[in-house]
Length: 540
Image: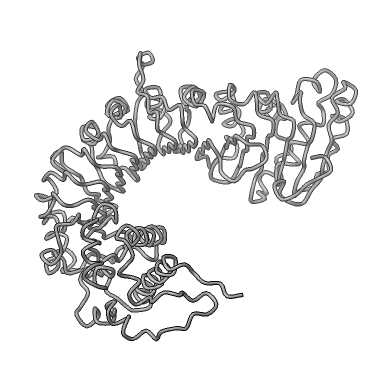
């Protein structure tokens, strides 16, 4: 059967093949780190379209071959169709980290028509001059049109930027009105040479990512940074950077979508009150991450709860690392009803309370009614994770991690946390607890007061399935063994299935099972060797 393409379809297929050939050749050829400045000898390797037409051997129509003359058909293709093909390859390149930045200039070298189309559509094709390591900025800025500039020297960097790279950054920063992205791993030597340029207005800046190369003496940004205003900024990512006047800048960040502050040094401290107030204009904010480095000292105000809260209606992800007093103060001043993921990490501290955090989670739509709660114990910390689904544990919706290296404190700490989160736990249907690795210290703790375990179970009134994994099997079975009589009806009253996984116990749980059977609330016990998410048992 002779299947032939329509003339228009054949032309489009030919153009796509040419574009693929251009970019595949770019991948096979060793090129400079920044391809905006391609040497003349390198440019000759990409043959123009006219040469391709002369050297291409004509094919006879057969199979999927076209019935049109492809040598002249390309010129017949409308500009809009060409732009669609170019735009498609842009999206493919930007989705593949190994293909970034998009080498759009290779299309501009094919022929005069393609060059005109590319430069006539800078917004649609997202044309940028991207400068990075070993890229001669000063030689190419005058060669290209006045396109947006992206300065990208991301981590992991060399020990320090080479002198020519520092000169390139300083030269590019002089065009602050055109810079749309600033991604730098910056040392104090570079900052001392560019601080004046960094304090100029950057009206086109959309992405800011700064990492201090000196972790011991981190960089401190002045109040005049970026001219004190960031109206177009969509992404802020600072690591080991002290920026105490950040709340003042955020009051102008109406376009902000992502705010990530990692390893905030003590010199970059700002109060929860001023920080929450500055977020009132960030109505598009979707991601908020705040990571302090210890010690993160903050004394919560003894005043009553704020009368009003800032509503972050677009926020879907929130992360915090620091002490409990800070996050308690912060979340009492904000509402995020659309939150889908929360990750909280507390430094080790003798006492803490999280009633405001619990109420903050309770004001969200997705997180206030978890179906599955998992507790993980280790030598260093405790991790409590809530899942909205009982069938999948791929990613926790709300995770609380608490540093605690004293095993004697871990169970009392868990009881304290469960009391604070009791309003969220009452509807949980599946409860999992595990201790890995197999800690000999846990295995030897049979004398632990069973009343503590029963106190931990108290908030889980709706649990139907209870999974115990690893070192804790012996402890929990010992705690449930004497639960008979009226107590058997009160402890985990909705329990239907008990899974004891990856461990053996010398203690019998039969008295508890018999008592539950007597009260008409039978419990099935399953002994297994695999993770509960990887199996299906008869009791499921």
